[in-house]
Length: 349
Image (tube, rainbow, N blue to C red; front, side, top):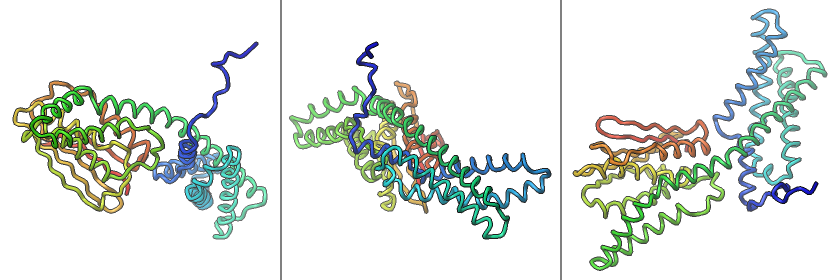
């Protein structure tokens, strides 16, 4: 039977740069969350295996104390090497991307077994060393398989996040209001009208740009500048009703964040905290570097309820993209307090 054209083997038509970034994601094992999962997973399997071969709890505890030395040293060594070599591994053929990390897993496990002997926590026979190497290779293969599945899952998740972001971020009524503002200014203040259109063009340039590779994110200072442009346009609409306060820490400027992180949050603040209230409201944008973390806060006053009730799309979108980029190392908290609505984001530096 002739195979229909639409059933033919699909070719990967993504640009080479995009394929390279996606491959690097596969070997991105540098996140704290992934390290914790790998270590806890190996420890759990090790604990269950030794429990089946130990007659008493004290014997099991003694065996775990020694085996954990070998297991943890092997796992951490494998993660460290793969993290350091992710750019090199991403450029290799698919077969090598599997073979080398699996062989590395066997070598790390074998090295962990030898370390166990070196610190005199147990003497191992050659068969036990081979078994340790085989277990390391198996563990590396399982982890690689999970990383590959995660990489495949991230592509549609990124696309969905981008779509929801565009829908919730730049709405038709905002474009309509901004163009009306520019038209009204053309005759009385042409230079100001030109500035409004420049800000709007920059916003849409970023919003409608090709999603492309964003694994590394953008600098927080770029996000702040984009939020400034957005609020400058809204300032023309609301005048003195919109009161913006900036509290920016220059030490936080270089932290990497997902593109268009701030703009949906400040839009929400204006829409729900300023627009429905005759007296307007305050919007505070705060960035602060604290040790190994950076805190971002977007705070707006709360008055009358917004006429257009939100659905939480912007917050869900931001939370999803933070999780994709930083895993459990990033946190987003949102809720009311003392007459204000606070969105707080904590990121690793």
